[in-house]
Length: 459
Ligand SMILES: Cc1cc2nc3c(=O)[nH]c(=O)nc-3n(C[C@H](O)[C@H](O)[C@H](O)COP(=O)(O)OP(=O)(O)OC[C@H]3O[C@@H](n4cnc5c(N)ncnc54)[C@H](O)[C@@H]3O)c2cc1C
Image (cartoon, rainbow, N blue to C red; front, side):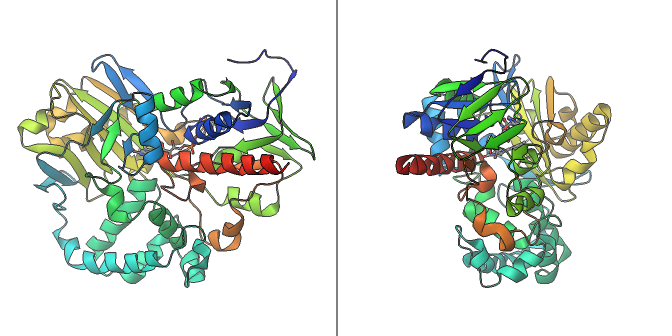
């Protein structure tokens, strides 16, 4: 797929930087419209934050990045069907577990076991949050009546001000850790509201019936591979982009040993990765400020495989959460007929921090301890265990979502979607639906491609 490694220029209509779902979806829209496209990817694979490995033991793919879909992830569902990617409804028969240190609380799925102290104030807290959410315009969150106040405070500050019970505070605080890999102390409250609003609401995001955790793929990277195979042009792997030069007529995109020319470029990278690129001329100050004020969250995900789904025999569903931030969540990845057991355990935001700098042995021990506390001691003996620490991935620097710090949305929010000359922007962080999710990545890619096509039609 790579053009020869020379300094020869290769000319396309649009150059797309990044072969994650967003870049590839943009490539799909442009290809269908008849454009010739080059997608340049730094890694030796497509898919970005979707990354699948084949398990010899299970005879199927396991996912170390994005996997779950809500029923209203329409673009992703179409792709899943088109590329025959296995999709399993979330198994949820049996009891749910909440661990608090080594103590295990059990209850019906959705009954918040172990969270009794949080429940009396939970309804009031949720009503306050819903109230704030109601005023958010997805296309212009900076127009909220309290935009300045909300953007000057972190989500943690809002929780502190509005929720009295420590247990309820803790419960609400887990949401950004879990859904975006971001601690409430790190993110603007206005930005938090926008993130939630693009996904529907906070309850729907964690819902296992039709919401954010309704069904999961076994092989999400197959979607990106399918998209890459249908690009009208080139997908060039091992091609880290270093510099983007634009003038009145065209853009030149430089990799280490190749140079690409196009009429415009779509940059489909998270801001932390855009910060590493050189632009000539320099990007406007507001755009540089945005990229500097939009870090990415922390996610570590592990998949553990067992001879049998032993927890089911004990009446457990395999769904588990944590009261003390020991981990974020455990999910059973099997279907009702599964012979083998397979679970996913996620450490998002705060729970991920203690894994980030741990040795491999310490990290694995923490993971196995958490599984054992939730599902029992048999959890210490997986047949296979694969761990992905996204903060330590050179070409991602974290996951799942880029988030804006305080004061960013209100100062530069209204220009986030604007192209800078011939440079257009994509990536899930710019989506108006399901920001931070695979659906959001596709939607942002589609929006950027449509903007390119609109400009093309006028030229
Ligand atoms: C552990 C984990 C679990 C998740 N779970 C879910 C889930 O269940 N459901 C869901 O919907 N979403 C989930 N997500 C989020 C989802 O995977 C992402 O939102 C989505 O894949 C992001 O796509 P993207 O194209 O915007 O960005 P990315 O996937 O980050 O794509 C950017 C691409 O650019 C490349 N790149 C970087 N720098 C350069 C450069 N200089 N030159 C060329 N290429 C470069 C990268 O290698 C990458 O391929 C999860 C993410 C993680 C990490």
